[in-house]
Amino acid sequence: MKTCWSALAALGLCATHVGGEARLPVAEESALVADSAVAADVTAAPPKPLRLKIAVNDIYCSKTACSCISKIATRSFDTVVANLQARHQITLELTYFMEVFDLQKALRANQYDGVLCKPWTALQYEGKTPARFKRVADLLDPDDKALMSGVFLTLAGSSVRTLADVQGKRLALGQEDSYEKHQAPMMMLKSGHIQPSAQVFFSSCGENLNALMDGTVDVAVVSSYALSASCAVDFAKAEDFRTLAQTEKMPLISLLVDLAKVPAPEALRLQAALLDVSGAQTPKDLLGRGFVLPASWRPIPSSVECREPARPTVGDAAK
Image (tube, rainbow, N blue to C red):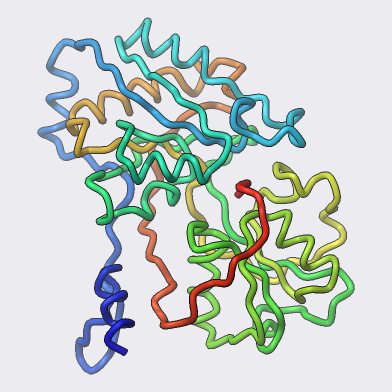
């Protein structure tokens, strides 16, 4: 029991008792929020050259996406990087990571000033590395949407029809480093007092869908884009599945800056510059309408209960 409470404390998730009720502490806002004084500094001072090293792992980027969705993932950041340099004296040195695991290794080593990726990929290391990541902007997908969710799916002909029906069923989820496929759905199950009979944890939407289609599990949790922008498009069709529930909405891709390395005024300057080269000014190779102000999002890890370590699973690095 002592080991369990130590783990809870490390996550900052030990329940506090108020009025006899246990509740989790409020999670920290992940979006960069500026006060008026900092905003004034951004507009008052003439711009100086700013150079930032940014790690990139983007679902729709041609340099980081799987080849199986090469017709969908055609995004390039070349033009927007050139525009930032020419118009705002901001140079982004981009390093592309196709494998999320390699990106996570670089983040743990604290090698970059910022990262463009699913925000939980970086935020999960809060308190475990010197970095203090904040989201300065969210990046729209090709349909001009900034948010995503986790989706509970079952086969179209299944007797499972609601989230409550997951009680006593076999469930496939993502690994703990996936917010929409693990953290958020685990919170939903806990809130609804729903206990699957078995849980397996895979590294990709494709593996979860394969487990559902071959009968290994009764329900699978996937990212909301799984049937349109993941390797699953090669073998899975939307009409073959029934949606049982969706998790909370969360940012799909964000540009996060490490405030331990980049002063807040410079982070806000980058934010303003990204908005300036987006919208009507968005280059075609960025897809969609570019960057928008970061939506409010306060992620809380759900895996706070004591349980056996996850057994090794077979899977690739695609998320």
